[in-house]
Image 1: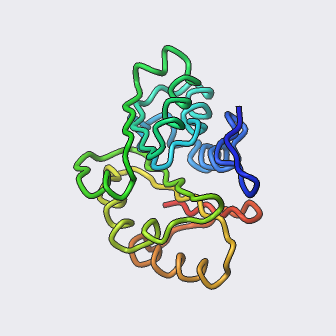
Image 2: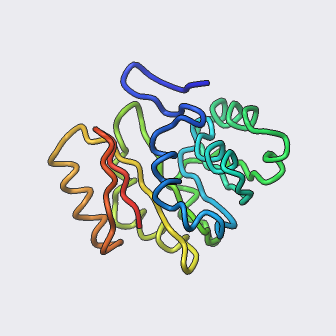
Length: 177
């Protein structure tokens, strides 16, 4: 199953490149991951990739589109479904009230192929940082459409997450901490 528009794939099952890249980058860390926060669930590709590798963390899936969230829940295996916490809410609203910390936070929020500006605001990124458990990690999937905006994203990201790295996959840039 794929979730897509004319411009972009939002989810591509266990073949979703950003999810595969994150799992490859954090390969040594995955056995310790206890819980994962996914902001922008799509069809649950990160869930499929992580569980497909045999890992069994719990997942909090934040998706503002109730139909897309419903589809994501329908696509996971029954043994995985019991470890999911679905949240049908805008990520900005969720993060304003979130007090939990996660081993891994994945930011994958798009409107078509555009990342909404709140996602790379210092305030939102700080809320995401506060949600990373000690010793945990964060990944942010970004599509470069405008190079000046990409420079601004990196500038703001470096304020909140100094020392981050970028995984380059064509127009996709995955910032990892």
